Image (cartoon, rainbow, N blue to C red):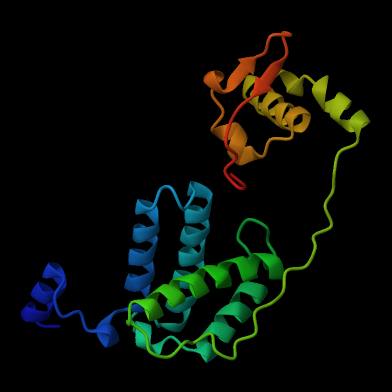
Length: 207
């Protein structure tokens, strides 16, 4: 790397696509998404950051941190997917499921699509790569009786847990997602002429 190349990159001139490192491109892509606050929620950004974390672990494992964007190919994608599906998670002690791995792969696919649009890539590494289809999860729900048991549990007097419990029960009773409860403010709760209280907010996931 020459001083001239550093200067050209710094001033935004003559950036040669073949010299861009994949890890640098993905980091810059996340930074660009952060700037589009009206398009991408914090939850979506966090998914990209988690994808980046898994990517770095995978690339470091194989000594590929200096891999160029132009060298990212279908074979590497397949190996990364295999890595996600077979490497035990530090917290869970087991590998992630197909739905979770597909979420991370889709984040890479979105970033690659942008690279192609910017003429940083000529060939699409996802050509011929078969994306796993999402499987319907077996959702476990609480019964009304279980919610009542939780409601009356004192949680050994732990005030922090009691607050978490109150927020969880509030979500159960109102049907609000966690992301919507987090953004809830007093000003969003309105009282109508009949004395009934209503929540007025724009839901993050569906708008």
